[in-house]
Length: 78
Image (cartoon, rainbow, N blue to C red; front, side, top):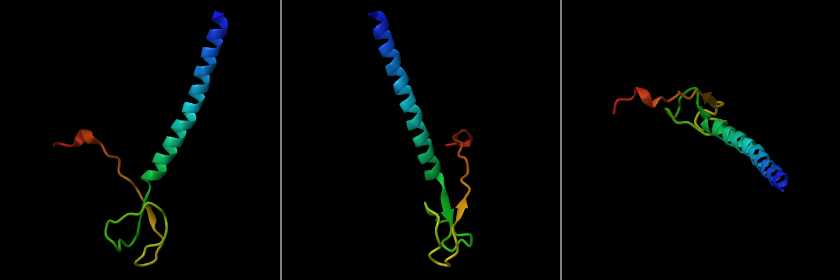
């Protein structure tokens, strides 16, 4: 009886762990795509950025991906 219970418990933990890996990967992919910002290379609209690639509404040039700076709160003196 203990062996059956133990086997069922191990199966449950294994199944939950495999699903968690998929969830973490999906969350990582969503975060990575959410961090991408696009801006006009001519800066027609100043520092305005867009969430998706496309064309600048002012000059019609292709928007380019903007390199996002890593933020580090350790260097701030508030």
